[in-house]
Image (cartoon, rainbow, N blue to C red; front, side, top):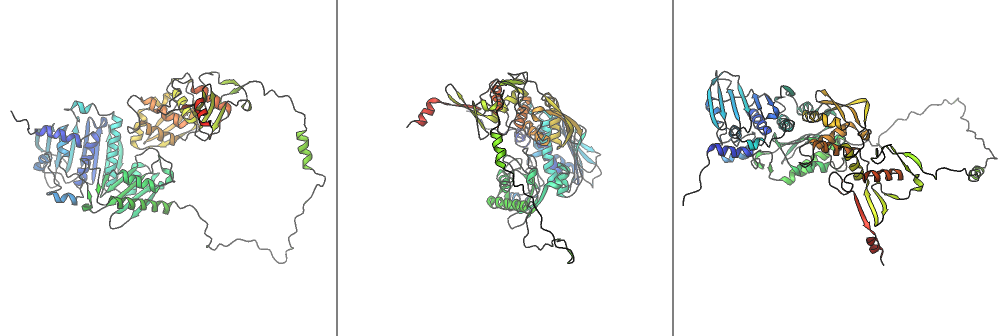
Length: 602
């Protein structure tokens, strides 16, 4: 029987390794930027086209490579960072596994131009799918210039799983931000489709944060710092009032290496306990310096996960440092009783006459009970409130699909005992089989969702803003919203691109007239984000409609009139799916008479 075990060719082995290292264009940006930083570059430029699917180019002014090193750098496990296994526990550089360039070259067309500062001539290298196409001397600036074209050109199955350009660009920007934040002393530039997204001069950590996320960060950040024998913590955390639903401004760095850590993220959130609403994320930029021997950075191919020798102690230290920062910079005003205060008491000269006693006048004939008696003894006037009348539908609920004229015929509130509101959250009413309970907020979300998606006959009314509001965004947020301007406009939300990563809110749906534009934009970005809890079947318009419906729906604390409750119930049961909210939660439940009898049975 023939042997069946055989060694894989290098080209196939590299493609398999690429599946771990190169997941999307952002992975290429990350690896090449980190290599540029390790090469002691002071300036790094990133150029991408079509979300990185057509081109990713990284240019640096670092040490460059010789002809031999340039060719060797594309071999698997070729690295200049370590010589023996023991050095893995003393690493302070980024790339060290020797898989990045080999993996990139296995799934793309790569061109490298590089020269060392002391060399007169550089090296041009072209590799297509792990196959060397060209190697020759060339004239080029000192440093390295990597061009990665047509990612996954030889693996169509992988290429078709890439997202649209804006989504891939968001991931590229995220990786760019991580490397730029970890190295504020280096100049970075990012260009997409010939448009400059970032131009970051070297500076301090806080200057780099403001350059990436806006000048408002200058007033929203609090310094965080502590030192001990286990870990030194520094950086900045956001004030509680600037917490947002949308994540994206939360960063941990260990020895200048970005890391993801759900436990440490929870330690920060616990430090903000009862200071921010549940589900909100404060911005934080926390830098930790640890002895490399006490961490393991080699537990994941992308090196974004780090294992600490004493993770519990690090958790406590980070929590205490953030808590101290919040307490130091967010102390409410207090009264200092021990502080001496000079009161400005007016001075009266001794020669001044003494002040006179105020006088009062009394009406002895006044009797307050006479007025009250005359009120109750007044003859009653005939009232017409007992007859039905036309009452406008409250703006809270919107236009009822069953009443296109904008009004309904009903009796006044004190003659409509059919509905009972419980703690502002539920409506209870009787039905033939027992009792029916309706969740008010979920019912309103269902009604608005069907209006926004066009499932109901009610048109989407829009109201022009008297003074358009300008909202500043990050570049990836700006790209996301601009891509969906048509869908937003169809739902009554008119946004205009103001340039420089800012948008203007010109009009909003009438149902959202009281919403804060910046918070509404946060909700929309959360809905449009790839990490949003949305299934494949839900369209972009449905995701936007659900976000707008949640923003416009009544809160769980509003006291409703009987008319409002009647209108809500009528509109709910005119919907196509009155029993289930758009996100799959129940709206209506019933309690049968048999259940009531059972509970009250002696």
